[in-house]
Image 1 (tube, rainbow over the protein chains, first blue to last red):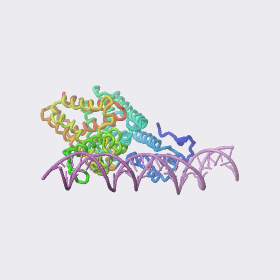
Image 2 (cartoon, rainbow over the protein chains, first blue to last red):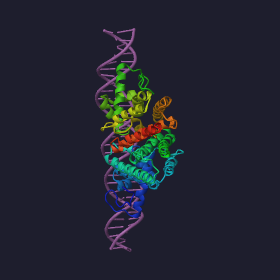
Image 3 (spheres, rainbow over the protein chains, first blue to last red):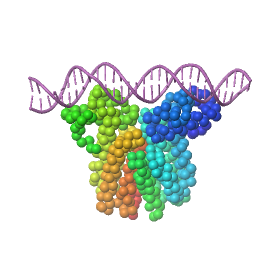
Image 4 (tube, helix red, strand yellow):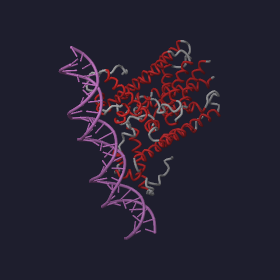
Length: 211
Length: 211
DNA sequence: AAAAAAATGGAGTCACAACTACAAAACCCA
DNA sequence: TGGGTTTTGTAGTTGTGACTCCATTTTTTT
């Protein structure tokens, strides 16, 4: 699940330091390409060029394309959660939630990362055809949801969250707002909907909290 | 834009009644397949089989695959908006908004339509590679947003909406909640997140309205 | 330093799916 | 009913991209 040290190639061989570097470079370039163009229209040859390796490496390390896609999924989950988990770990106020929102907005603003959420995008493209891809992505979403929920519970413990707001539901609402806002970001090429969506939820929170 | 009567084949020929029937059958079957499996992994041959036509028909009516995809996009936009527009046209109370929510939930509950929103799915798959596909989908989302916004404005006019809720932002928030909830529906294979997300927004509304 | 193990390059195979050509059939209007 | 147009079926062709093979180089281990 984690981007933990890779120890094996597809055929079960140990990897040397150089092998691990190559492995990681391939995954990282493949992830970038698949995010930009989608999985289906990213050819192995594109990955070769981007990572500066030849065809046989990719098959040596990942077996068939599915294996590479799995590795990309894990990579993207870790990459996304690596941004959110630390921010949500110290969720002690509405301001902290706003800081979280600002990070999300800054990532997707100004024409950067306009293909939405890497995890959401992979979910849309793969959840049907590749059952285990869906399972991996779901595990990622569950961790994300959990981080949000724990953060909200911490806020409640500090009295920063009104009683009528349910941390479980609100965590899902925030997650859905991010995902939906980013779907609309793909269509619109701006973050207006994402912003409106997150602000509406946060305002709601404040509205309740103030009274 | 509308599923208005099709009058021409790809090469500009008039269509007879029978031709139009075939045209529509192809679009409709293609839309169903592309929703289930995604655009990239739907082969023309699959569409042939599903629609009971042979290869030449599809190319006769739509030119290359892109043309069929465009037609599918229009079809799905009309299909989705055909559900939402009437429900949102008479948005006179929170109860009406709940009825809208219930329709959405019923469409995606019990294992049906677990591939998310047809428009959202197409957006994720196509928005980057096919610029005009994105434009069509954006136009669809704009109409959807507009329907929501007009509905909310009507609610406000009736005094059913608190002043502090901005119809523009709230419309986008609802739209994002649907899209995000449905992305999570694809991963989770249940509507829990969709439900939580819509309920959180509606509760927010009520919470404000009551005071 | 030499043997073993791992990593790499490049050329080649192969299946599949988009797309075409053309002739036959069905249809529509006079 | 007949002639022109629209619609359909069959049998291709072609380009592409996943995947393989094997010889060579580099790295690790003893």
